[in-house]
Image (cartoon, rainbow, N blue to C red; front, top):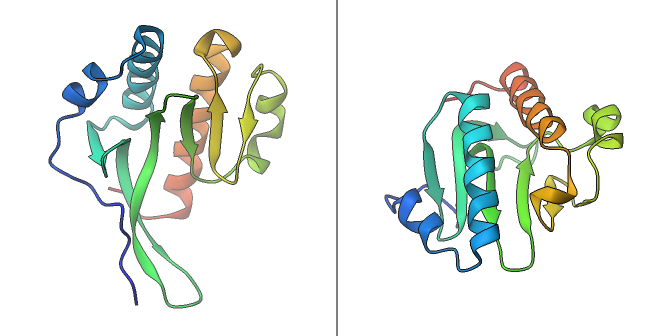
Length: 140
């Protein structure tokens, strides 16, 4: 069975965030980092070269594939800030209605800038997703 290519690294999160070119994106990333630290009580870890993750959990698929992944995290990409909501968005539909301007993938929340969303709603979304993950999985 193939291993995940994206794994925790020893790279420094502060150095990574300091290297974000766009000053607004850098500031937004720092705000999201603080939200995630409050939600998880965990220190940030780099996952691969561009993802900042908090905590971890072990998953097992019916196919036999298993591995470790971040409990929550984000990536300050050039085009948008990506927030990883691991349970997906269906359990949080009522929160999503009040979030603001965003796009989603399966577990990815794409935000152009934090000014586009209600930060209190975003933080609640992160906290609630972490709580749900803790109910579903044995987390670290």
